[in-house]
Length: 406
Image (cartoon, rainbow, N blue to C red; front, side, top):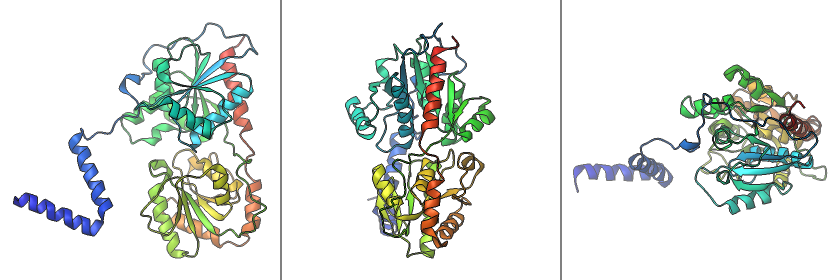
């Protein structure tokens, strides 16, 4: 064995003893990625599907169908996972159009393929109220009166594959360039808003960002809250005692690592308060916690009803979790920012400095303030009831776009 190999072996054994097998595995995976690939991550969209706002304008119908007639609308999205908040909001809008008598078709864009039957089964299980046919984008976008993009990738796909005359819209739930570092994907996401589609912004943060960053004025609708699911359980006689955290390690905008640090600090101050983590199979947490990788909405409401407070961090558009917590009587601790306050103007929110100590202090203030049950009931009554406003807005805007000014 050469001296170099001996040094490498000794270093590997030392790392294994001091850092543990998980760290060794991560280092090995990173090394293999660098050596086997070119060191660059893959785009979330195929290069052939990227559009360009500098290209000619896409064709639209010369005349819309007769007013009050029924029409067909496509919706392009990525394959959903059960419980996906963004997909849930999209499916609410699809259901509203279906309730208005229109036909909707869901077109899935899967960068890496995947079985349509598998994706369809997930949609039927997670959103059984939606009747839309499910297809792959590759099957073509013909025969549509309108098509709606739901993310920056799907906007590019619509511009690339939807060349037939149709009306094109863009349901914008967040300002998605903020999802990426300044670079290629940031620029491509930003350009998606310049493709000429009619944009429907979910909330003032998105609308303001589109004006400020891109110079585009949009239709605007507002957030809602599913108060039929998230509500105070008046039959429960258990005292609220815990704090809950929605963990999304793969989404940097959800502040996972900041929350970990804050909860470690909080646990040191209040080891008697149980901590619950849901949304991911979070491991190696630096504090004691009960982890629920996946919960149904009803199970989640039950968990919220056991908690005094919950972390609802988001560094772009506000998370739906904040108002769902309020509706269930738990006080959301939210990182303070103008973007978050734009769409969450509620007196029961605990705004926190976005630092570990700032968030821990906000949690401490919530769990140590008397009158927990009375505050829970008041907080629950303060939320927006349902998604009716957004559903009516989307139906009205799509119908205006399809029928035209006739």
